[in-house]
Image (tube, rainbow, N blue to C red; front, side, top):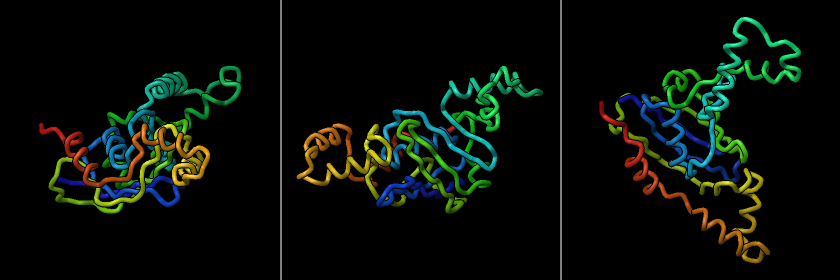
Length: 213
């Protein structure tokens, strides 16, 4: 089957946290999200979106935002909101970008047109990932994603974004740090651990295998 080799990088992580992954071409963005979650080591606690600024497009799981965009898109399909209706320009800015649902949008059209794009996980901590298409594979033999290689442990959920993770590492790695013990206890409770490619691939094989029609 057709597949894509992609590289996932956690933007601003130092040292860089990254994974090289193969994904079947026929999957949706929801399944690409699932793949990124497994490959990186996230726990799928939060909302996410894929951004294609060249097309003024966001692909998201955020049903509330999608329903709001759909309502205003229909209401202002032929006319712009008046100053009274939109005094701060919020509706106007919302309508500048089209929204699609991740669970009903397939990746193939977008990956081959936009070989690099951004995936944001957790709108609070705002984990930004760069997704780069590296290779198109015509004869992929497996109906599930695989991690080929990667480096770096995934930050714990809710650690506070890149800045919070940097502070976390200072305490985690320094036994003399006044918060070392408490941070160690919290991090272990959040399952902070080294990246294990074999375990990750086993999980993806079990959980993300394509269903035969």
